[in-house]
Image 1 (spheres, helix red, strand yellow):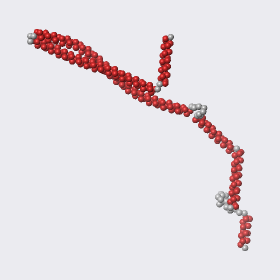
Image 2 (cartoon, rainbow, N blue to C red; image 1 turned 30 degrees about the vertical axis):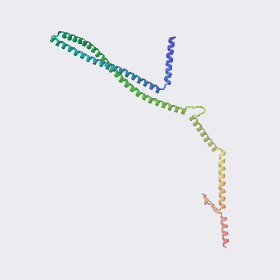
Image 3 (cartoon, helix red, strand yellow; image 1 turned 45 degrees about the vertical axis):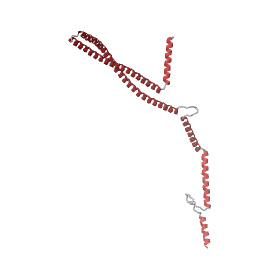
Image 4 (cartoon, rainbow, N blue to C red; image 1 turned 120 degrees about the vertical axis):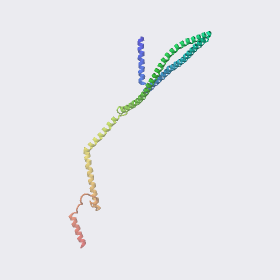
Length: 270
């Protein structure tokens, strides 16, 4: 039972994580990753600063111990010299006192030398740790700069992906069916082309029908009648056909009309 609950809990956790990753904004997730990297770098710098501070403190303690060691060495030497001078002067009491002081300084000197050796080892270890900490900070700083540069590249790639997705959506909307109430461009084009072809076919059929030929004959007859009436009007007005712009030759007068005109001219002359 416990194993089943454990498996179910892991499954639900994986499912929630998967859904979250699908719905999450990559831009926000990228910003979170960079923020976490910067926070890690900050903590690393703090740790490195503590290590370097420990190394500095160990160096200061070592220097102080070396100064005390040098001072004890001088005091021991001075006590030995003063004991020697007192011995030469025949003062046994001072000789013993300076000898005891020199021995005390010597004991302190031995203890301080041991302490200095220990502090030298600690200072060396602290120096090595400080150098490693500095190297780790420098390496992590380079990695952080690479992540920042990668962030800019990914943001640019994300913007390009969004633009391409919008373009793909716009292009697909030109060909997909948008609904029964709104026809597509292809459907409208087919409808217009079909209507145009039907109109052209109907016109050709009308040109081939008997009614159209009869109409053509009727129009030609009306045109001939109109030309005859115009000729009659011009004749009454005494306007020649060529004056009216006719392209045909003028009609010659009959011989009888010419003879009658000659006889009337002779009668008038007599």
